[in-house]
Amino acid sequence: MAYGNYLVSIKESDLRLLNTDVTAIIEPSYEVMVSHMMAYSIEEQPLGQLLDHILDKGAIVNKSYYHPLRVPLYYTNKEIKDIYLKATKIWADTLKNHAIAHNDWYRVEIDLILSVVEYAFEHNEYLLSVLEPPFNHEDLSLVQIPFSKALQDKYFIDFSKFD
View 1 (spheres, rainbow, N blue to C red):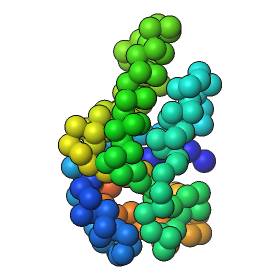
View 2 (view 1 turned 120 degrees about the horizontal axis):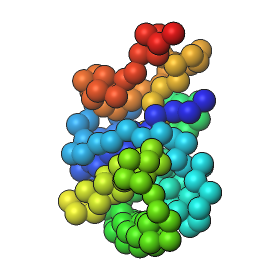
View 3 (view 1 turned 30 degrees about the vertical axis):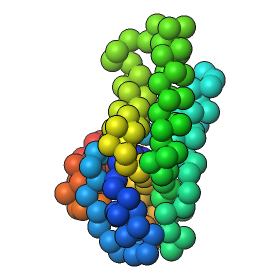
């Protein structure tokens, strides 16, 4: 199953709150939703390793969170500086070596990922990676998302409407 991946920029105080309270709801400064497939589907290296690092590595926010794949992860503002500098170079090199259309799905997803990394870097914030809940899983009610219902609804796709 491919999950949606919230990738958000947050203030340090919001992270401290999430570290101690899994019921806390925060409002990110900047947010995107990308496909979690971006963490493991890019064969071009070092781009694939970079995206895996951004989406699926980092420190655990709070061990009390639950998700069948992985719990929310974060990077500090200091770590974001290094990630941003590497990402800028790797993406520029990739675009120099490969013609990728501006409307290519992979490029759009990568641009979204890098936009939140850039925002976190420019605003000295933390980067938080949270997977959306599974749609058909017995543990659905155990998965907690630390964002408002309005933010979650912004990215929700009701697949029951598609035949």
